[in-house]
Length: 107
View 1 (cartoon, rainbow, N blue to C red):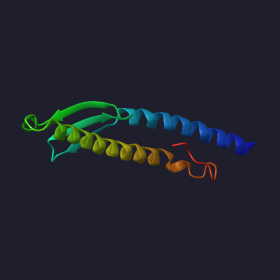
View 2 (view 1 turned 45 degrees about the vertical axis):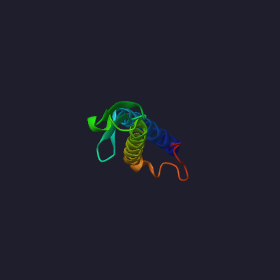
View 3 (view 1 turned 120 degrees about the vertical axis):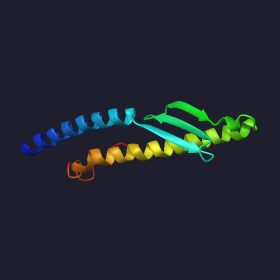
View 4 (view 1 turned 120 degrees about the horizontal axis):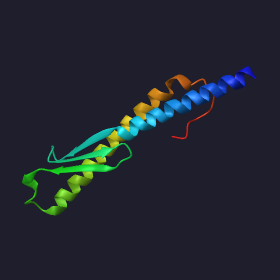
């Protein structure tokens, strides 16, 4: 029973740590850039687009170009955000590798 109690304590500690990580992830912001800085987007931790900045020099150009650059900048920000989230999860779960052999987290 000692082992079960220890596993339960570790699981509770991991749950608390995961809640902390989730809060940090939600607060994380990532900037995406396209067109050599002509278009910038900012995303929050769950991928919410919170700002778009378009250089004034693009406004006279074909709107499809601007739209493509926004999509590219969004994709860049999303990749950076995904990497930041992955890094946080690895940090959070670093000490729990021996918790239960073969157990994988759902994310």
